Image (cartoon, rainbow, N blue to C red):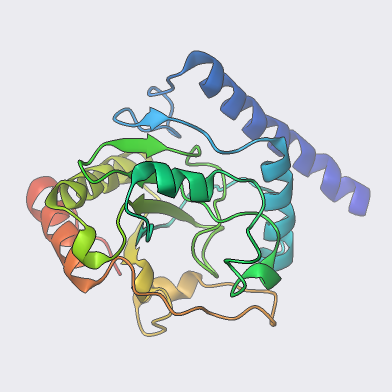
Length: 236
C-alpha cells in the first residue's frame, strides 16, 4: 500500500519541478494558469525545498505532496521588513532560521514563504508557481495562495500596494475559479469566519501564533478596490 501511494506522488513532484525549471529557463510563463502575467518570476524553490514542503504537508495535512491543487483562498500579509531585498533575503533560504523563528520551528524545517512579494511601489515578484504549497499560514497552506507586501508594519503599507494586491487577487480569481475566500493574516484564527471551514492541522503539538498583518485598514481598502474596480466580493 505504501509503495502504491509513493508511486502516484512521485510524478506530481516531477511535474512541479519541471514547471519551475521551465519557468527559470524561459524567464516568463505568463501564458500558464500558474503564473501571473504582471509579475516577474523569481523562484525561491529548488528540489530540496519541494522535498521539505512535501514532508511538511504530510505532517500537517496528511498529504505527501508539495502540489497545491485548486486553491480556495488567498491570504494577504506584510513582511515586517522595510525593503524588498530584506524581505526576499528572509524568504530565499530553503531551511527555516530556527533562532529567529522559535515560535514555529516545531512545525518543520522548511522555511516560510509566499507565492507573491509586492514592493512598496506595487511591483510584483512571483516566488513560486500558484500550484506549489508555500508555508505562510498555519492550518491553511495546502489550500491558500500567499501574498506578501513589503513593509515593517501596517503604517508602512502604501496605496500602490493596496491597488496591486486587489488587481492581483482579481487575476488569481480569473485563473483559479475555485478561490472563494480572501483574508488578512490577522484574521486566520477567527473561527467564526467562513474561511475557517478549510482549516486542517494534524500535528496537535503545533500551535497558532498571534498575527497582526496586514491589518484591518489595509484589508478594508483591498476589499473596497476589489469590489469597485473588478466587481469581485470574496468571503472572509
